Image (cartoon, rainbow, N blue to C red; front, side, top):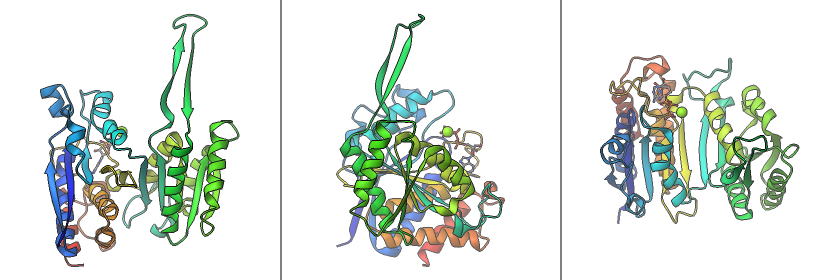
Length: 356
Ligand code: ATP
Ligand code: MG
């Protein structure tokens, strides 16, 4: 019997409505080529929905998604709707309710992509950032006292649990094991943050004992940021707490070039809840509606989704098709120096996957 994967599709706002159809076009080509089915359920949840109904998604939105294996998301956000509404009304509930504790971003220089780093070749920038996505510095524990007086003070705590720390570090080691270099770097700051970060280092060292084949190192976050820019070739898999991972997962794709090609995943590795796959870029109101945006970030997120769904060959066929298209001078959008439309790029990648 053919395997069927149940996918919830949320195009969202702006160029999400243009990139998601191209993502689906390529996923469909991969499904035909590799012999599985996709059962898609479409949701029109967006800032437009918010403007009509006062809600980004219905009250039972999370329950509606619960049966899917993954969520394929475009972009959420629009001028006039504050970030706390678009984020906290849709993205954050999905990440938290479904315990998507891994945020994963590939940082890979693709042929023809413009890295701000001069003279770097694709072989030199190819790593992953793994960010803890549920606790740490973003734990919302703290308070403010004596507001408006001279005694005013605020505090915010960073919470690391053993379960939360171990599971993200374990995920990063497992990912490193699957890569040829088998190298894992930890982001720390145990010289300045004297309780949580030494604990992070301790758990990192402890977990490393179970993975003797993985080479490890660690850097303080400040110098690590400098190394991302000066020595991106040093890195293979990099793991960080919520805050440090947040910083690195914007810096990493930036050193690898165009925002339009960067992909990301919010993963529940145990697969007891859906995971979510989305491009790094936002809804890009300045170019929305023109079908000139780059769909590659979305398509690449689709490849990450297939990998998570247990279709690694199909995932590889998509990333290979993207790399070939760029290396061989296929259609490219304006952000990559071409003139092609969003759909031209989607079609070319879909055709290459079908022919793979
Ligand atoms: P958000 O807050 O939702 O992350 P943002 O305003 O920070 O959104 P984007 O929406 O990603 O950022 O847009 C930043 C810039 O990058 C804009 O000029 C936009 O046109 C451009 N951009 C973003 N995505 C793409 C894409 N897929 N193709 C081409 N250009 C893009
Ligand atoms: Mg932004």
